Amino acid sequence: MFPCVLTVDIFYPFAVIATWLVDDVFRISNATLAGSVDFFVYDTLKIFFLILVITHIMSLLRYYLPIEKLRDFLTSHQLYGLDYVLATIFGAITPFCSCSSIPLFIGFVQARIPLGVTFAFLITSPLINEVAIGLFIGLFGLKITLLYITAGMAIGVVGGWILGKLRMEKYVADFVWKLPEQKENIIAQQSRSKKQIAQIVSKEAMNITKKIALYIFVGVGIGAVIHGYVPQGFFETYLQKAGIWSVPLAVILAVPLYSNASGVIPIIQSLIAKGVPIGTGLAFMMAVVVLSLPEALILKKVLKWQLLASFFGIVTVGIIIIGYLFNGIL
Image (cartoon, rainbow, N blue to C red; front, top):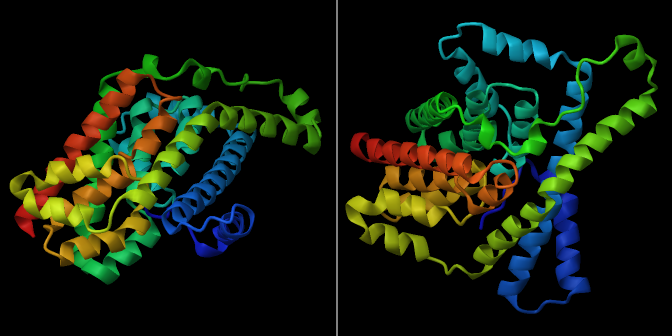
């Protein structure tokens, strides 16, 4: 429903293509349908671009960097939760929406980074980024911004820790574990030309992209329909009438939507300005960026339903608790 962007400059060509297709190629005169189609084209191009770039980078890192050493460090040292904190910090400095974070999540799982740590990253990455923090400070002030950052990281750490303790590795799709052999003969690896290395990296990245492509189309398609056809004022009306149930209702209403934190923050400001409690508004925002139906459809290709349900259930409870806490203290 809301655009999920990193910066206008990076994705501007995709906006031009979307507008060109809607106005000049398809010649769609209905404004609602035009908005939905524009959203679908723009976000599909953007997400595929991000996934291709990120999967290529992760494949290149796996080829050159000793990721096994990082894995061994995380699994063989008593870090007392520091690994989860580090994952949430890394998530906070990666400016991706939920769907765009998935390729990195896959890369971490393939590198045998502990599953709970990878989920700590996946939870935090869409919730917190530098653009969102800047908007938060400007719209809500430093105090609420710091509370939000703390709450977002807390959900990431606790949610990741719980998922790690459940030991649900068997519910990750089999194809994710089937990495090309990492411990290759050093001489053979050094003898490869840059072109051969590029081909290996590209092949692995493309294979991952192909496996989740259908889910991207379906997920963005649902988001496009909601973007164009959910009436204005729908959420304000129902959230104001819900009373004490406004927090869980906000989470339920947010699930079908699709955005990143920086895209939905201005909407939350308008909800709060119209009388929606701040905790309810923040719960709505968190659910939009972490529990979106498009994200679930894409993750369904990577995670089996048992793990997917556990992930969504744990994060949902965390968001609801945070929503009530914010309503109580602010």
